[in-house]
Length: 204
Ligand SMILES: [Zn+2]
Figure 1 (cartoon, protein in one colour):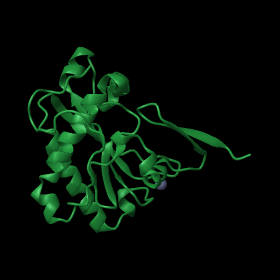
Figure 2 (cartoon, rainbow, N blue to C red; figure 1 turned 90 degrees about the horizontal axis):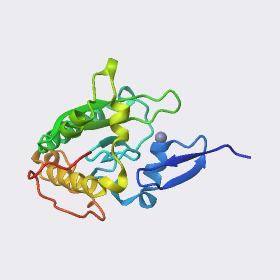
Figure 3 (tube, protein in one colour; figure 1 turned 180 degrees about the horizontal axis):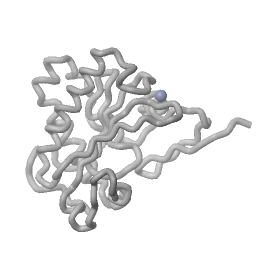
Figure 4 (cartoon, rainbow, N blue to C red; figure 1 turned 135 degrees about the vertical axis):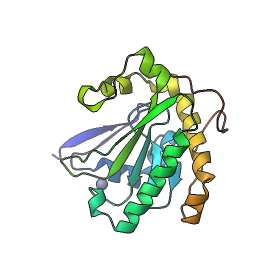
């Protein structure tokens, strides 16, 4: 019998897949079966930007690629350039949120079948302060920070952040000139405001 494993998603959705299934490839091949919040906010057919699949931190975006490549060193140089262009604009989008005090960018290569993706994790200052979270790498409590956010409680904030980030990306002349737009599909099922600025997103 084939060994299986479970892929867990932030809204409680799970998929049972064969043990050798790549999570990144599974998500790219099953877009239409994923939770609506995981519809990419940017998608040029190769590069995707979407809410993290597992953690319910509002505004936590994953910059991924559809091809199964393990590292930025394995990409054609043009793709590496395009990837950093997207990250550049995405980081600017996060500056629009007054309570985001920093963005931690992680690119962890898995030992087993790595599929390139980069975390862009916003640090919400109010939550960091309230829970005395230390983001410094050698004494990091970021694992505890991730667990502070729960999907049922933060559902609207997650959708609102995704919508606001998508609006920012869609308004980027740089991304338009480089052909990233308008292939981006709309974020599905998103309640709340789509406006930039305004009040900080309420966090934990
Ligand atoms: Zn893959």
